[in-house]
Image (tube, rainbow, N blue to C red; front, side, top):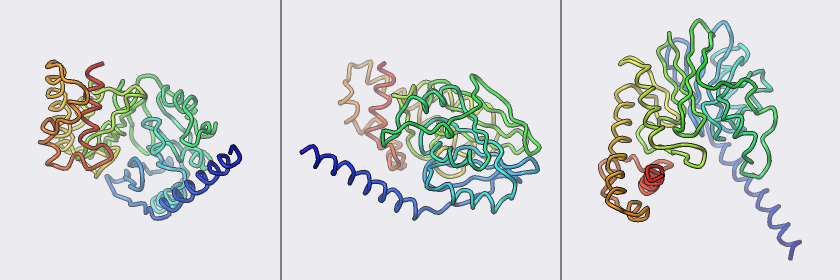
Length: 294
């Protein structure tokens, strides 16, 4: 019986890895020009930011490891320079999965202190530990600045938002903001409560991002299409609306399941298709309840 279980486990990993490989085989990397030398790459996972110039290539996030070759090909079409720096906006695998590959291509990996800590301590989905080469080697606590390709890039930690290690990056000359997963354009966000995320922190992160930008800023969200200040403000209104509605339900003594099943709470934004992404309507109601209740 144990022998059969071992075989079943081996087959699970073989066919699981094969399915993943086939899934990524179909992914194409789309390149969108954001400013004179800042680009956004769309593939599978979080949106990638790319800055090119005389100093080299600067990356924000890197999606999944099986996509690294395709991503590198897309970058090479923009610049023949080496990849110098890579900033992870947080620790999730759809933003850090290519770290080891990018490090081998020359990237120095940077992230918030908590990103490295979580990558070191949290097993991957297959139960293995993160490779040492995938870990950030420069970490920061609050904020930092990078001076590359003719401009200053401000990197700002936002506390207990999507996770406990999120960073916003603002390109001061290009007037481009990369929000990481503190902005899901046109859809409900994933707030990872198990990784230190919270509704209040998430809302504060969006407010900070809005303070950094103006009406002409191009906003690269963690997920979704290239955006702007108006859409970012609409996203904030949605978050604040849900916080108010669900806080009222909590004060009225409603349980988690009662709130999760109450479709009227999110109907305004469900009708705008906010619940068609990774996080559906019931999940966002449950997430808000758990965060606000605690």
